[in-house]
Image (cartoon, each protein chain N blue to C red):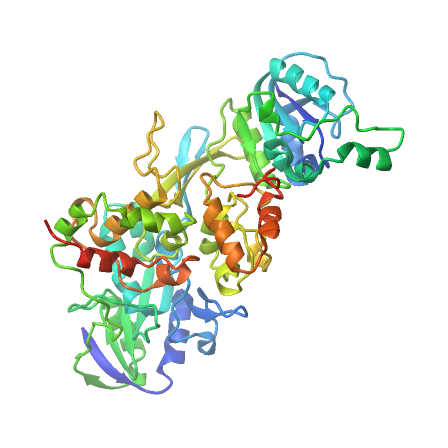
Length: 319
Length: 249
């Protein structure tokens, strides 16, 4: 990884350079004051330190992704994704990409999008909702902008910096502290045992009693990745299959044939979400996928807070 | 190619649902190739031949004995029965009628309708088995067309969503009208599939698609009260399209 001090006009020049080969998107604040990732024409549109409503996940794992169309009995794959560069990605969202990269390691559609995606990270200016976990290794990025410095993390990033060599002043050592200044409370020790001990506690049902089951928390999460398949017949008679975002707050999420529901109450659904976020499943067991961006806390219409669940677990007795 | 035989009937309703289908001008020619409208008064003047049907689509709520009779007749003739729109699903806005229904009828339709042969509007599942529900006031055109195409292939569609509007609203990265504008949006309890049509242009969800699966009605009512709505306003807002304005959620 290389680091350089940059000249004042580095950022607009970087944008120009990227626009030659990529569709460039970045955080832009709309008239409604909502920040979203959207196509960027001018550097001046870019909101340097705003967390978009939905992270870069929407380009890697789109909410409604065409998997294939059948035509006369043969499968037609979706067209290849375009080359895309996302600028101004805060480190929490980059760590989320790292997690998704591993979840979808064997998913050809994800990997095709991922290899066509260039990530330009940026030093975060935390909001009151953030609670990042401590970090000692850098997240994945091609370039990372840290005030007047730029770091390169991949050969693609190196190449870009070579092309912009006249905008670099001098090489610097990379001493960046990857732990965000909005550091949240660490995960409680013995989380697995605390979790098991809390299974039947009324805490979850109390939260469930407030929860609307709207699914906003999961919809805005940069690491939630549950999906469903949806088939349609188009007017020409072809079957079209899409992969759509699912949500563990939907009543049919854990409903199986025969009518059994593994999560019959909103409390059980909230507990499941916390388990998936904080403890993980399968090969990811023991790894929290919560990157601390705080989107779920900000999006909840009834102020349900994942930190409340963590506090509860921390304070609970261990058997 | 043998066309799939369908019927479309309207009970007590405004015809808005069938207009939604008939306004799909780009797709109508294809629909005409695939389906034979055995009985579809707004589309075809052909006389009903009384034969068996693959599907009957029913718009409107039942409010008169002869409507129930029509419903029962077509149910016997048809493999599938599809309820279309809020009126068929829950009684819809027709349920807003008060207990002076007969008096109103006599005043408005003097001579034509006395209101004596009417009963409070009911959702059609009170009288017949319903195989498929397409919600909305009116429904989304693509949901009606998609359902027809699935029925034509001999199956019920699997794409109709039953979760809250919030999911699609969040996916569209909208400003949350409930949370950030403190407006009485019904998104959290209303059935999605409309791609958050109204909140995306700054209008609160009025709940026209009826309740989502397992709606948190009490929690939503609590939220609306916190926003300053009276008990009656909460009841009217949540009951407008759900047939439930007479009861507290």
